[in-house]
Length: 390
Figure 1 (cartoon, helix red, strand yellow):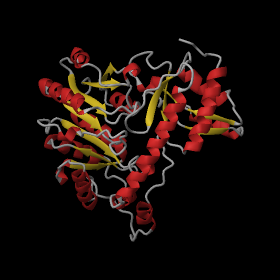
Figure 2 (cartoon, rainbow, N blue to C red):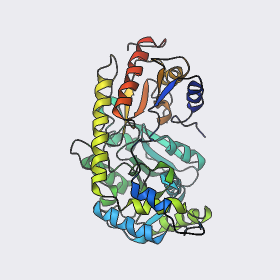
Figure 3 (cartoon, one colour):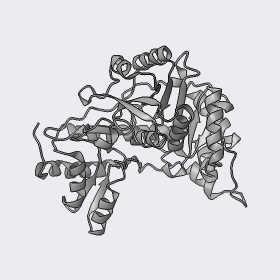
């Protein structure tokens, strides 16, 4: 099981804090946006004498409200298409384990969310990476690159849209290419659409659930963690119109008993939040994105494509090794009593030695803190002993 590139440096950050250093956490997608009050009040005002199990598929009242949420996004579903999970992570796990046997292969554009690799390893599933390039903003690699990897054990393609860790948003044309490939080779299409609410510059998110002819192929993973800035609720969803997939996933759901009762209560209430909440959150992330990318692009020898969605970016830095650099930031660097914690991009690749000079940055802090963090990074790049000028 690989260490998380997002969390593996936490002991070094904790040690730095104990020594009095302030750390700006840009390593993890933990927003400082307020959780909607309506969700908090639902838990605070709970009228139950027993915190009981929920049904293994999740509370029906919550799933009914989810139907309305997806309908607003142009997605028509039935109750049987939705299984509530313990976070989006469990949705990924259930999706992989329901569709893939040990030794099966899944093709994933890299860099990708690190837990895809972790869950694949847990199920003895083989990840076949197809590399997207920072030089073209991490667009979908050529379909010919996918074709070269398809063999007798290939069972699925997996995407994240908008993408974590790159912030790339797949276009309708790119999704159509994947649709044709999936149909040609009779594959599953796994799609992580957790960040669908966060799309910028008047671009539009297109759900794979609306791709024609893929009703039996698409398995979607979702979560409330980022949508409502409620990561600790641990409520997600596995969604598919494939009845056999959902029946199989239910066996895993029954084995783990039920998703969190309190989390579902809060998540169900959050679905009633006014649209003005999302407009305000969207504007805030957009302004943070603009600030961060402008600061990064102004630094010498730094390459950072402007993301179209989510709240992450990948930046190429003039450093010899991103793991070493990120640890050095915590152990040895200090700028005005502060430093910054980043996620080395090596952990988001499956290809050996990829991402050695890249980091993932989450723009989840207020703009004043983002500015201060970029001051730290800019100074650090000037004095880092392993600085390169390639």
